[in-house]
Amino acid sequence: MLSVLLPFLGACTLVAAAPGPSTVLIIRHSLRSRRAGFATVLGNETGVLVWGLCAAFGLTALLAASQLAYDVVRIVGAAVLVWFGVQALRAARRRPDPERAAAGEDAAVTPWAAYRAGLGMNLANPKAAVFAMSFLPQFVPSGAPQLPAMAGLAALWAVYEVGYYGVYVWFVDRLRSAFGRAAVRRRLEAVSGGVLVALGVRMALEG
Image 1 (cartoon, rainbow, N blue to C red):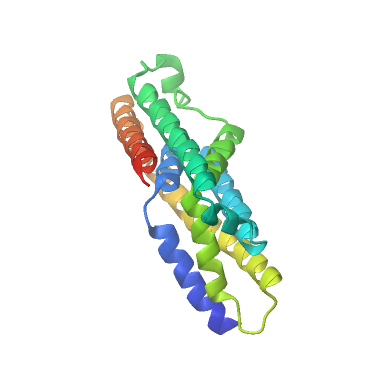
Image 2 (spheres, rainbow, N blue to C red):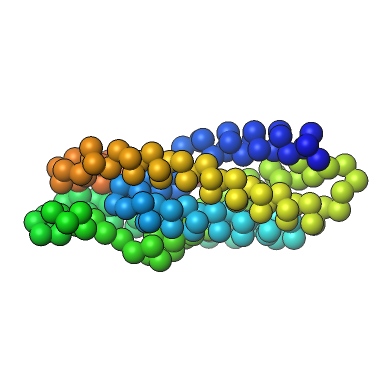
């Protein structure tokens, strides 16, 4: 098993390190609060686990085989990305409340809302589903029963990424004082919003 797990965790590291919309959302929420950042990570990894289990049961193969189903999820995913991006751009334009800003609460987001955002971001991405279907079977040990092995790998993948992105949250939280000024925070909101909108538009235009 060690000969399988080490390459698998190495591949998980490369997957997590690749920038994407979930990473942008995790960093954005981590700038608001550490709790929001961790909640976003947990939501995202719940989505990873869901797609991994769907791949184990062969359900993501249906999405990959049906162009109509894939396109529907792709358009919904694009709309979700654009919506999150617009929310960030609106937050960047919003005039801060001086009293709440002084208390560090101007950009507050509840952990539950952050969790839902992370989960929705992941589940609305059809590429995540197709990737799980092609990624996990490569690491199933020879002769091992496919369903429990893939389910176990999916759970390990999700848990590992919780730790990986948890480092992101910790690091951003340590730097949050440097980003505490309202002007800097609005600029970061604008950048993250623009990135999310651009990713959503690209997803919508992809064939």
